[in-house]
Image 1 (cartoon, helix red, strand yellow):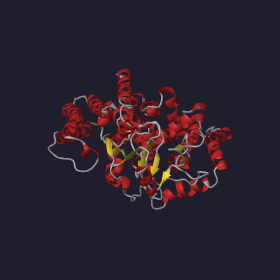
Image 2 (cartoon, one colour):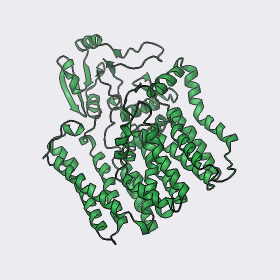
Image 3 (cartoon, helix red, strand yellow):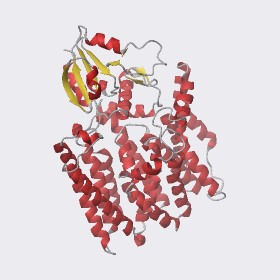
Image 4 (cartoon, rainbow, N blue to C red):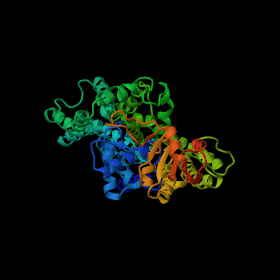
Length: 534
């Protein structure tokens, strides 16, 4: 059973994180922003100074841009090229979890850990949208697992090298924030397990710390040396600003993760308490380490004012490992918990079916923009897959001898099918993307024409239009530009250009269309509209 289960787990993983990865347009704002910065680096050959629409952009260190640009080198400037690194990062995260499970939980738990991890909503979301979250989570998970290997005496030189490389890469991916979760987990675990673990662990600090610095420091040194005022920007705007009242946006109360964290961990979070009890009976220190690992991120990130759902992404591999521990013990199958999950799937299927059939109209949100036919085409197959899986889980767990593993496989298969189906829908997927209007603009633009973004930044527009636009009524951070950015237009300058002799194509959100006098609408889709002045 072990080998077939391993093969099934990795097959489900491939479906969950890879299928349709290049079918849908770059999603605004984050997915498109990261992909476009990487494209501009790739085109210009400037791997040091990140730029967004030609303007210096230091919101994040460059490691994710470099990885995305590597995808362009392999597959060209496409959605698949932009997001290829996400598939690699998700596979890497699954492999690290698999390896930890085999070493510390038992070989029977390893495929379950992979299966549950790749079908956890937080991981699926992170592996579908290009941001730093998945990269940072991988660095943190490598650091945590290799540290535990060394502490427990099961790791060697390879674990030490991986630990220091992960710490350096994490800093190059998101700065010192990447060290918070591993540091907090390690400190808490060490305090609670003083005197345990392997005595005299050869940490290799004499070469490990220089290795961390060799990976983390050079890029920062170059940009700080060549960009006056950047250190203050990093420390005050980017770091301290996120701690004070949501200084960089996204302010939420401290209770934010009380709802968000469980929601993004369902349904497998239901199995984690059972797994913690089962693991605690045979591997008490591993159970305690995983429990701390799962709890620390949501607690830690509840303290700053700025909060986003995927800030707590590093916790979900621990949740998957604990849930896998519940399935790795054939004598204590979590029948009741799996039955509850199956019932939840049936309820969810009914809700999807009601909305897909149009019995309950959707008001607000991305789904509100779908026509009845589009909603049916998107939601009814999902309702069918989820409903069948839920019904099978209920049937197989009704009997004391029913196959609980088969029920979990059915549920995980439905969860893998859901994102694969939805994201394969391309432009029919209800997400905000400039692909439709950008491709339309590329077909319309002639020599001498002007492309303008009006009042709403669409970072992915030049990706599709093949031309850098002017920006009208859009504020951009230009403090690090050595001279005035001429492509930033005031509203008066835009009106003069719009009514002038040149042909102008403007891209904006439908809500801003009324601010553009006259013009002809050329295309609409993805939450944007393309208008020409003549």
